[in-house]
Each structure stands twice: as C-alpha cells, then as structure tokens.
Length: 173
Ligand SMILES: Cc1cc2nc3c(=O)[nH]c(=O)nc-3n(C[C@H](O)[C@H](O)[C@H](O)COP(=O)(O)O)c2cc1C
Image 1: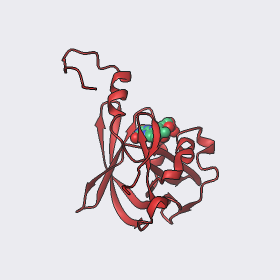
Image 2: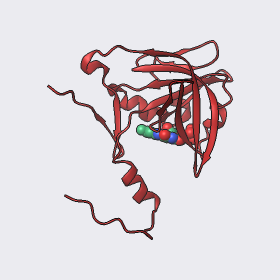
Image 3: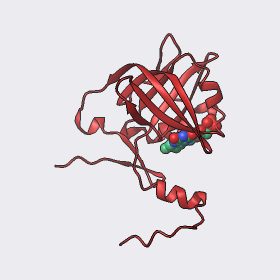
C-alpha cells in the first residue's frame, strides 16, 4: 500500500488529524501530584524528552483539561513512564477523576510529587514554562530527581499507544 498525493486546501478536521497523528507510536506517562491532600493526575502520551542541561522534558495538555489547573498548583509534579502491563491503569488515569488512582501503588514525595511504584522510570519535576499552542499547552518541566528500572527483559517493556489502542514492543529474538 502506498500513500496518495499530498494536496493542500484539505479540510484538516480533527478526525483526519487524529488518524494521522495516531500512526506515530508513543509511550505514555502518568503526570500526578497531591493537591489539597488529593491524588490528582492524568495520562499523557505527548511526553517528550527535551534537554539534558538543564534537564527538561515536556508534555502537552488540552486546554479543556479540568485536572491541569489543579495539578499546576502543586509544588512538585511526579511523572511515571508506564509499563506494558499498565493498559488498564492508563485508561483509569484518563477516566473519572474519583477513580484514577484505584488499585495503583503510588509514592508521594514531601513536595507532593506522586509517582507509580511499578513504572519504568519516575521523575520529580517542577513547571519550567508553559507555552500556548493552539488547543493545547506545551508544559515544559524541569527535572529534580530520576529513577530508572534496569532493563529486565519483557517485564520492563513500555506501554505503547498507537492508532488509539495499546500495543507492546517485541524484542528481536
Ligand atoms: C493513552 C492516553 C494518552 C493521553 N494523552 C494525553 C495528552 O498527551 N494530553 C492530554 O491533555 N490528555 C491526554 N489524555 C487524556 C487525559 O488522560 C485525560 O483523560 C484528559 O485530560 C481529561 O481529563 P481531565 O479533564 O481531568 O484533564 C490521554 C489519554 C489516554 C488514554
């Protein structure tokens, strides 16, 4: 199968864009913090590493998010790279707010950063910059601490989000 011609003046409607964006596979992170004593967070597939010096990462949050206005008030934010077995956890983190952290082991730092205990890596961050970008805001985060699970074969594969569904990497034999 081959791609057709790229013609301008197309209607770049959301469905068409989602389908195209969805061909690009990504991992998923949990962005979470304790805000006013409540576990608060969401799932985000827009995570990207940005800079080593200073250490920066980013994710994009929809301007319609009801959670981000609370999360951004936290002194520190936790970020966790989800593992292959986290499909259900990921859906919960994107679902009804009252149940986002049901049955998930988390650790809260003194500064309120919340990370999942069974992720592949976790980061402690603060908001470095927020950049308006259409219907999303690019949130650039400065890292203050990082912990990474050593590579342990299939048990340490990441959750993959691709074409609106979850997949998994397979290791070459
Ligand atoms: C796999 C997956 C990836 C997601 N990635 C993002 C993302 O990058 N940015 C975003 O704003 N929402 C993303 N969401 C949606 C949020 O997790 C959440 O459902 C949304 O922000 C609405 O909840 P809120 O109003 O509490 O923020 C994603 C959801 C799923 C299931």
